[in-house]
Length: 259
Length: 155
Image (tube, rainbow over all chains, first blue to last red):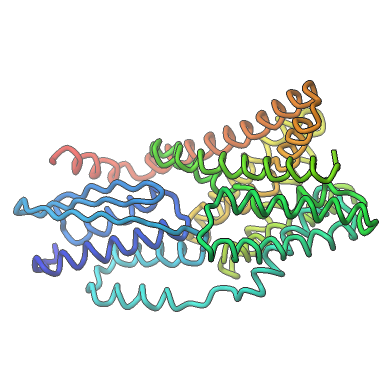
């Protein structure tokens, strides 16, 4: 029953499994999901032993064959974002692989097709995504409809600024700091000009786009699963972002005399 | 109306976040319902104690996510991260910072500790449900667990 691949085929399989792990990690999956997926895929093809170690930006795999030869791969993951469509598809793919054991060619073809899938266009991200989040959260935190309108504009501007600074390879700490600075200034200005009346709600609502809610949740889930290194890395990342937001908002409040 | 409107806002906030996360459109109503459900539970139970309300809401969202993930056969994170978002104590963090900037030491401590307590309540809620589900999963499939243990020992 065990499929008998050639040595070359096994190396190709290892690389493909690494690709799956890489894309999972880059799309914002938890660390234990990445480790488990790679391990299960390799075991499904009759590898004697597979050791996987993944943290937030690095995957290391050593696979040991029946004749005691070993292959090791290390993969760095540089850019990460949240793309749950990708996580879902890759999860289905790795289940399919473990069940059907398709050829390596077919797996690669499916991954390529997955990458071609359309994501939301940038205008939807700006207006529906960031603008929408800011608007609804401002209402949620007790703002009026005028406040929500100001927050919508501020949220859209946040996305534009975020993308520009990301394009210029600015550090995430500085991006968050300057975005929160801009948002606070806009909110306080809007209240001063009488466009809105609750600057607190606007600031909280708009900053929800930047608050690291997912990082905290995933850090918690990693910690429970026993991945202490990955969990604390994500926790520190969340803490740094929160610090940047606090500094940016605080400086702007002092400068604008909003305190 | 006092309960209904915030839940509606929570629902649409979650919908906007699912655009940001590029979530499959098929699951969007269900994930957003999780967020609205959590906030509803908080409003109903959190009348006496904020922290207890947050804890109860987190437990409900986590259980809802685990059930829905099994029903739809997708990873749990999809439902959990989006559903938890309305509970993230952004307001508490903001007011803590504001009191810090304005030099009101007593209110700063008070709000800061309260915010930490809320965050802790969320954490404990997630830990509790996830750990129980893990135990239940192992109990359901003892054979798989056994096999993996053997694999680790024969190395």
